[in-house]
Length: 67
Image (tube, rainbow, N blue to C red; front, top):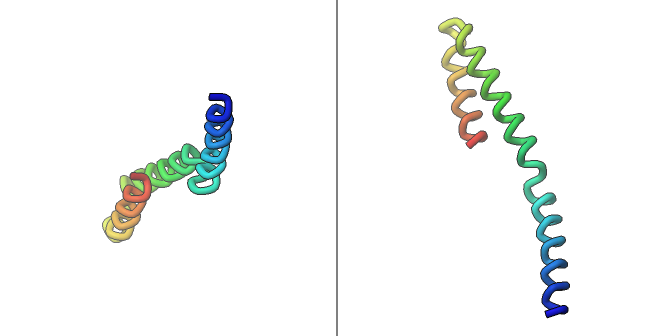
């Protein structure tokens, strides 16, 4: 049991390192994408009819990245 406990602790450390290196700070990335999406949506509310198509495309991309 002693050896198993040490192996599991080592595995935990390795998995934490792998998670940081593979995905980075997920919470920060979500907040950034959420802010981008909110900014696009607010801009859509005040945009003229000429700008709406481009902003709708940007909104769609931002939603997909956020999801």
